[in-house]
Image (cartoon, rainbow, N blue to C red):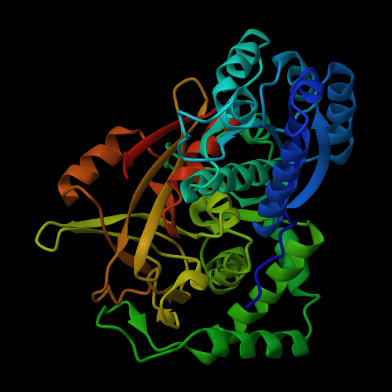
Length: 479
């Protein structure tokens, strides 16, 4: 299934230098311009849309370029120091924008010929070492300072640049996002309760409050043709084996599957009508009433939405929906999880949850199981069972502290092969760099919400940069 198309990161790029150098060293300006063109090419190879600001070497140019980037609403400004630059030409560009500003200060060669290199050679080679002046100027002007200092020839240098780009694009996506909140929290889970204004204020996300009647109304708009298409999509995406060994599982009932497809179609309409980029949902219902049946049948539709890039978190955990959104925009997916168990003999942790999962990051076709009941919840129906594909993975939690400030918690590990529980839930074996008991202790001590997002790949470099851009605390449990 095709995931939602994300716009290319929009980067404002300019190079900087000292106008007084050009008449003194005639070869310097052409070398600076050539390096700028080369680096614009690198950014475009990374998938960026580049807004070129040209060469900034005097104060009046800084004003022009700063205004250009503000008009173009760039996600990130990259100001590259290509030869010594007086910091007064850089500060105005950052002051005119709400976009994050990244100072790029690269050395072009790994070493020099100490018996032959001239002053003119050093004006280009030693540019990276003028970055501290910029850092000091930004600090004194109360501007956030971020930088990449390193070698132009080093792969890790450009990896860091790409991480900044993705973090800045994700910050913009959060600020533009519309996250639906449908129903109410699972009663009594104090760790999950949160403040919608906090999310608007700290990550920029708009929270669209939805009612179960919004979904119920769209059930009546769904056509038979839509249901048949959705059933075909479900059969193509999932397998439906005999019941698992757990006594609460059963073979998928065709009537319940059709109802789940009907609900999934209504959810598609809900997401489209409210322009949703994510959804946190839960509704208890009562005595097999209509809302109880709707809520119990949302798992398949929400799994399909999540795989399309619209993360859906169960138990109305809005903070974890934000964590899933972040990993999705990092290209990592992000499946709704909690800690299931610690396997002390196997040396791994099992992470999973009932309800929706990101079936787009599984290692094989996910399973649909009929469920005679959903433990701790009302209703019965169809549920998803799968594990995140083997290889590097990242756990990301979003919690809040006693002062109401959001906080990020992250850990990198590895999804490993092995049988999973046949209980109609997502569950993945994850091995970390510390024993299971130590990991459980360390993760718990962070004050994490008991849910988190599990995504593919090691994403800590991007998470660290996003935390800086959002001015949020980040606790790293293990790398």
